Length: 103
Image (cartoon, rainbow, N blue to C red):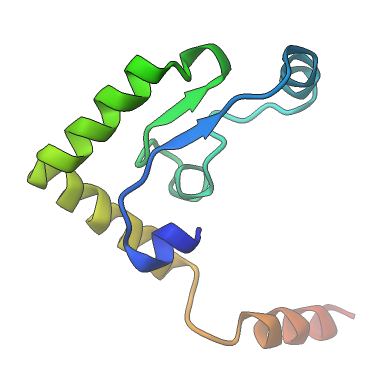
C-alpha cells in the first residue's frame, strides 16, 4: 500500500514454501493477494503467485510497465482511485468514534 500511496507502479510477487502455499490456499479464499487489487475488487497490479512467479514472467511484466507509458499512467490513475476510497488523514480517530458510537 505504501507504493500505491506514492503512485508507484508495481508488480506483486508471492512465492513461498509449497506446504505453506497449499495450506494458505486451503484456508484463504481471495481472488487477489495485493491490497490495491483487493480494495479495487479488480486487477490493477499484476500478481505473480507461486508457480506463476517465474523470472521470465516477472521480467516481461516489468519491462512492459517501464516501456509502456500508457499502461504505467493507467496503473497510477487506478492506484490514486484506490487511495481516494480510503479517506483522508485521521482514520484512527474515525474508527475510534465509529466504535464508540456503536457501543
